[in-house]
Image (cartoon, rainbow, N blue to C red; front, top):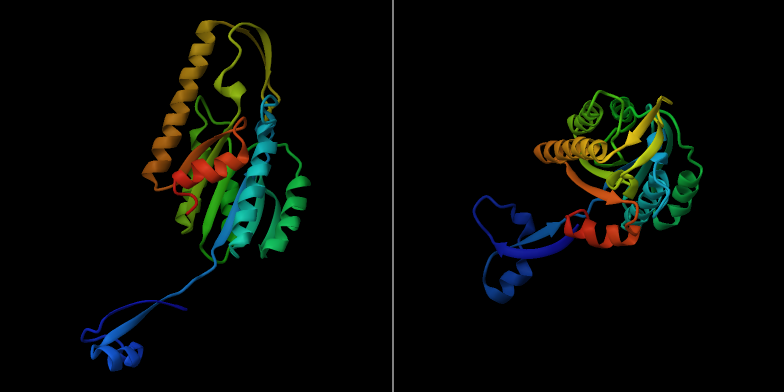
Length: 261
């Protein structure tokens, strides 16, 4: 508890907080106001499903970028003496680092992130249910993922169910969507073989301007729904490109977006 300011005493206020020294000097009844600093419980959820292996040009695979971003956020939280818990997920929680506090614990966080294996399908809903069983208190949950999952033309059900369940559990939720330059600007021509990273399904495709336009339209539809749904649910969200330096994302975009004060 730290002193914040004075305000005039009004009937019904707790007289124990009257500042009698100020009354002796000013002949006025003033109430002392205090603010209480509390540490924040932060859970950082990093996607390690196979789709996060995509990328490889500027910034490297999405999985590497997501781990660097998680490390940066862990350091910020630990430096602020917040309590940090790390969760890696694919078809559910695959690994977890129990709650840590204090700047010196960053090395435990780095070792945990460096040892993660990437693979499997994405099941954010199942992960959210498991997390609800582990967390005994409400706090801030940051989900770092590409939010891509098997589920029809647009993989919307998984991220809506998963993030929605975290909100229902009473957490404040942030969603950081990681995307690679290759996803944003695919090749415009040529014969290619597409392999679904999470299911292993293979498709031969002849890339034409029409095919690229169709892909970009579906992608834009997914992103618009992601932005609209998270905004409607009160979930802070942003997109993180792997060719954007992590420090620039944390210190610039996240501050301007209200993620950091």
